[in-house]
Image (cartoon, rainbow, N blue to C red):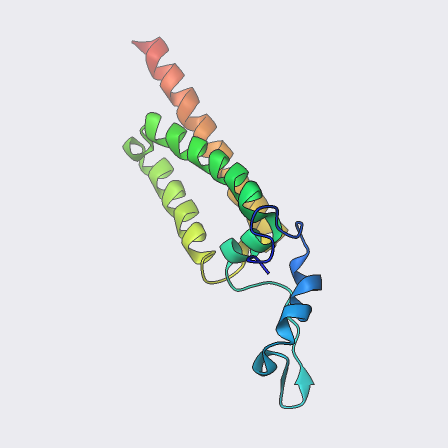
Length: 134
């Protein structure tokens, strides 16, 4: 799927509807023991996002992720143990997304984004408070 439209992708949420067309080429993933197999999501969020958003969409997501990572480093997140633990948990979820699809659960995705924003804002406020106290 991703190789047929590498620049623009097929559109967000299209995987479950278009994958059966590609699935027909591989009989082992069409049916098992006489039962039809259905795949709602790929077992890699990154490949599914590439198929759905293409390189253009992924570049937008990567730009946002790069900015967030840049802010975390500039705010020296590792100096605060709780912030370091939260960032480690966020990074672990990103690693998990390479072998499963945790971000297609709205609750997981929402919590992940909320924690990222919360830790960034907390670090910003801490920096402001430390600067005012000096």
